[in-house]
Image 1 (cartoon, one colour):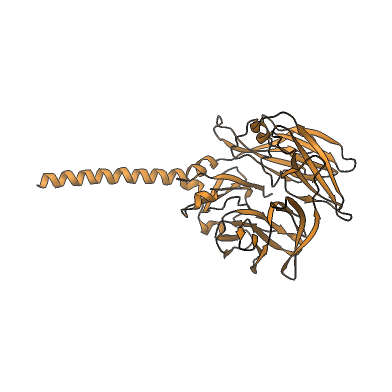
Image 2 (cartoon, rainbow, N blue to C red; image 1 turned 180 degrees about the vertical axis):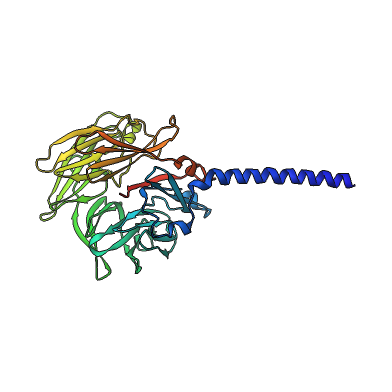
Length: 401
């Protein structure tokens, strides 16, 4: 009997050692790249961070309440640190003057200058997150879905002093933000109409102002936005994919320009694709539809999913291919690629399974089109691999410095 007990104890001891080694190994393997909430609460957390990426599971993966999202911060040495949250499909990050707004499906977090946490009603899909410099307001818009009397796009806006709630009663197909106002393109599927509107906050109240209904170009009746909305002193700009009804092989990529004073609409063809397969047309969709166009000087830059960057001279509407990123991926499959424009550069998140450090981002000069820098992001692969039972997708990328 004693011998049997000794055997049982020995087996249990062995199992305990095995499980302990397993958990210790995993802790050692993952912990260096994961940060806890007490870390992101520190006012100096962002001081040495140069970039942030946002990954999340999709809304359908959150039906069991176990969806995951991760904000990955890359420091000045290229080392990545991940902060895990609950899921939010199409979630994003807003950059303010001194900090940033981070979110999941139930919580807003202001981090950087002063930490603040705001609980909110459950949201399953993000839409747009940004910062209005003139009024010092962060905001986030959610694709909340159909309601009894129409459609709802819930809005939360505020700062360290608190957040207010609002609603945009429209489906938003694309959007954008400048220093003073939010621009939205709303779509009525039943009526097959699209309206450009702007959203402002007056005396802390959300106000929606109608601008113009978009007109279809003669012979075309299918438009799909493939960029955010941007503006300069004189115009609003956005990029649409234009097709004729029933034609799945031909497509035009069109820049829409709307005069702010007259609201006159112009359409400039950037590039035409003829007799292409669905995979070929899918491959050219921008890596980041929320960060695919940008104005630098008198040129409007437009980046697509083939790695090509086109420009439009805003003074004479001339279109040209400015440059192509190095070794672009030509197929329709994506591996976390993202783009972001800042100052005189375009930044591109890349993935290469053959490299020791698989995730990295490149910097390209908007003047010369040449690559000027490459940053290896150590730890991103390990952070993403630490998510078990769910698939996370890349939804946002921003340069912090």
